[in-house]
Length: 509
Image (tube, rainbow, N blue to C red):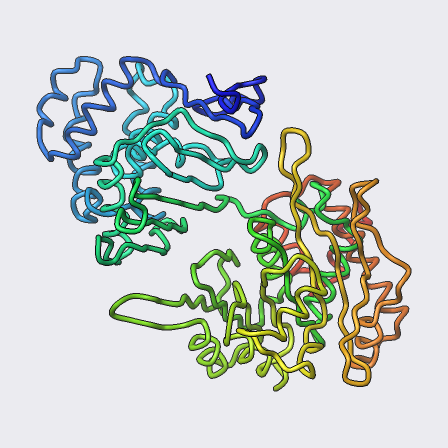
């Protein structure tokens, strides 16, 4: 056995597997017995019925099933799968939830299925989902799936990082999955069109390569997003940032309803840029019209009535770039423009929009620190004139590190930009203290508070008091274990329109 395959200790038992600590990477072992033999046989029979659209009469031979099970399965499950062509394409969230609900109801009276929810999730993932890669759909803490070869399948765990799995997948089975993904995205995937980068109906982000450019084996990479998006309170509790810094950012994003700031979130790959952007976006008031622009839809702004999500398209039939979408968004009367990732010539369009008075713009950029972000924005392909750089009010830097057996994502600095004599000035208001593993306020005065004071009728002390009040609200929600994203959103939005009501609830308790 190679030292790279050594397992040092057990880290955690997951829903259907086990995580082990390794030397070069950790390991995920799928438990082949998470269902009983009887449950696996029943799931296999149902799978055959779905895939062949026949043999349903065999269900009547199983004495433990209710008399009307076969009829209900045909009318509620098979008909839905057939109408939505789920043997050819992957289900979207709506179809998946309908089938889950229907199956859970049907299985209530079946005693030999011990864990109904687990059985349903397995059956759907194995039958109309990712087939032999079903485990990725069933484990909530898996962020990314990477298929490199028949015996080289990795996952990225949100806590334990990169893990090699004990799952194998032959080329024929992978092509079956890739064919279903291609059908689902509407994109051609073959020897002549060997690259696929798209979004699945359930929101997962997918990338695949054909053998013509990856000769050893076709590859597949899928990134999924948390069912329940992280909130500002989650970021505070995990020490990603402090409640003081969160209150400051809340105030800057909102602008007290008058002067919202332009903010760019920077960092490397998988450092939490999108999570931070999503969190900040939910500070925007509900009466503001938002246009989000992304290469692949990732942001989750809940059910806002006046929010439009735009997605770029790159196919043989259609080419709609991020820059096209930003230009178009300016004609849609947006109060806020949110760009998933600033990459090329779209940056100049975005900065021009800021220069023309579009306040409160949010976006992300690949850069490891504020200085690098400023230099990068002035170079090709961005080519932003130095005079426009300081239109960005705040840069947030996200980083990640590996601490013992887990991955930690954190905010490393919050920087304000200003301009003097044609030069861009940077001031780090918050910096990450490695010794205390915490984001700390520096002694540098905030230029943003001065700008607020100039643009509003508020004094600098009144603005500081407002930030302190918002910090107190965040701390209070944490102390009362308020965790649901919709509850947090409601609390924040209520504060905008009736601060007395919110403060009365806090002080009254």
